[in-house]
Length: 209
Image (cartoon, rainbow, N blue to C red; front, top):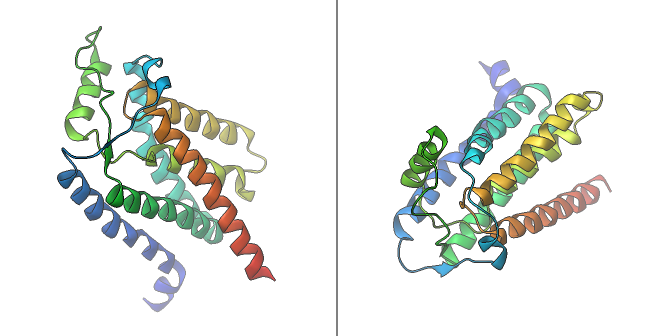
């Protein structure tokens, strides 16, 4: 048991979800009426496209795969990925708490009736149009892709790296084409990714010195 814990103790990082998920659920239940409206002129130009539900839902598997892969294959890179993910998710919770936000971008009628539209309707029914700024879908997708591209494990695996990048871009686009997020949410996530990366690099360099 001692050897098992010594080898796999880094899995305790996953306990963060037991903090994040209840906090997010609380915000979803309490931020329902009074919130700051998120809107950008570009939101009105981007059309709704139900087919983007596929990459949007693949996000869950993509993030889970990233955490699972590095957990078993590279402990140091697992730590870095967890640090980046959990830092962004914590900042998101703080922003949503002090700056409740939401939007009115979702369509009320649909031009087509197909399985993808029904999947979007299910998504809308289970996920409120609040607590969106910045987009965690975007932030986490970029974090996982950065982990893949900077990993020694994938340095010679071009197909996986390109596939990861394509999926990341598809997920980012899906948030806007499904009217789940405003362009503002996406831009804020990009800025937050850049800021988190800079801070982590600075901290790493300072520790090495």
